[in-house]
Length: 141
Ligand code: THU
Image (tube, rainbow, N blue to C red; front, side, top):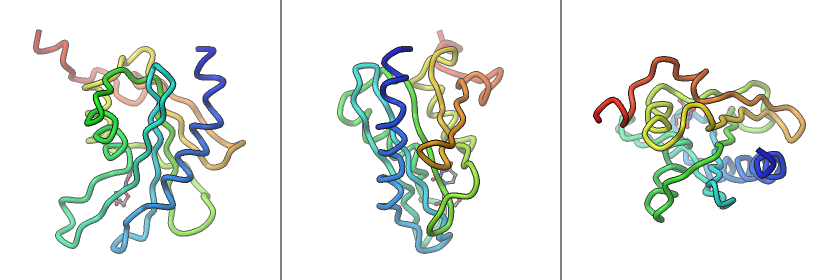
């Protein structure tokens, strides 16, 4: 809890930095995500689009796959921001597929999703609020 409070601002800044790397020539909707591990490391990701459209990867999944491919498995929070070029005017919430990826690696009761408009304007949700009655690894045990 305390760790997260301290990490909020760096995580918010990191998602905005990640958005600058967005590859979105088709939608022009630039998204950045920054994923915080329980040990305090931050992994960034941006959306990566594709001319065939369906291979497009959201910023959130890029951040998760980046972290998981580096051996990380325990996550505390993710910050997300998105919008067409320039200022952020609205919150961007994760799509259903990204919420399902969160379900795979995160505890629904403790993992926080931070939706960001600016360093001062952001909202924090628990994964459980965004994915009620979700399906995850424990359902297969
Ligand atoms: N997108 C994300 O990266 N994350 C979201 O939470 C919503 C949507 C991307 C996918 C696509 O590149 C663009 O935004 C428009 O849908």
